[in-house]
Length: 553
Image 1 (tube, helix red, strand yellow):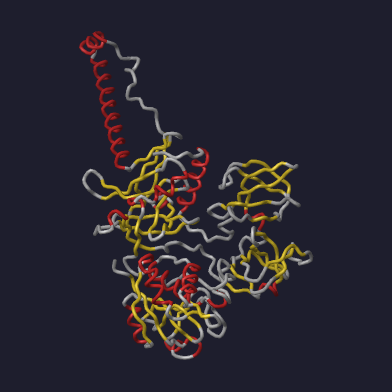
Image 2 (cartoon, rainbow, N blue to C red):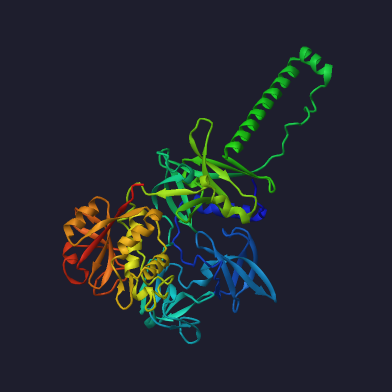
């Protein structure tokens, strides 16, 4: 099968993917990842700017003058060092890649992701002398630099992003959150079983490591080999090619082989080469038949599924949720990875490319191209855990029922999301769970969320994300025992819900994830190890623990 695609786009995407995958690092984003839908409009801070044809900025296109030069960015390179977008010169619109540093006041500043707690004014520069824009309460910002009495930020509007300056005083009225990408699956080891073989006792076991832009490296844990896709040009079929010019014809060919040993040896070498070429063509046809090779005949490109033990050569793959299952695809051309069987009956990865881009989704929904993904053991991260907070701008200002917002009342929902993510590695849709709480009457206006949400969430979403409800207890010793067995817990503390995901027996401390860290609770937005005494007194007093464990399906 083949897909109609623009050849230069494939090659550009391939080299970008190769660059980020081969560099062997994971990028923490500084620029918004959704600029394709909501562009970033900004003015460079320097007067002369180089424009490039490529995101690696190796092929210079032209030089442009700054000043009032306005740039509309719609993409960012994987290493965050270049922005792609459009600009206008002499009434003519141009496009290209420019260094992201031209917008930053301090390239070495450690970026801070936050939601503002009130409407604020945005200024043109750090002197705060000229007002540029305003942002509403619960808008998201990314702090880029501090200078004089101002803080340079990327700020969010309804239909765009901008870069400007906040006053240092107003900047303090913010709520910090973890700005890392919301990974569909956290880094870790998972079993992959295609829908058509759900009863198979030996699924693929892959270790996923996040790269950037929703892409992962996939390693077969049994062989310590990384999945990759080799992309080559399709050669012309020479199977019916005439004999070489030096070869005699007819009877002269037979005679010359008898009288000339050198001619005979040359013919023999040519015949051996032909046999090898024929064997290679036969093997290629077998691989195409099995699905290990996929050809785009329109653009003359051949894709070959392969494995490598070199992490720098590993491919980068999208792992996207499709309801209860996942699709694995390469780049953005609809090249999907599924399950097949080779000539010995062994399960193998195979490739499929739909006829056109419209059919890409349908091709992914074929049974052997959809994967059930499960964690074979708890995916709990005790170092640098991901904490989803109520004041993430993605949902902070969204209504939670008839009154209130997720920012003010969504702790029960976020405690559940944090617990499930820590346990299964799978990210639950926050607003989907919030809407379910409202629909089932578990949202209590003026109070928050009924604790029945914890059992209800498991019954509704357990089969999707791979977890089950494992009871409740008000006893801290039960909490300790459950955590040591691999459970996680959502916890009802004083006027709030949190998640507890691990216990360190050596230090006798619990890992607590608070979706709404406040001074009175002395917690942060990045996870905290707390002593048992804090769970037995004060604002973190654990009134009831609700447990989840991995499902056994």
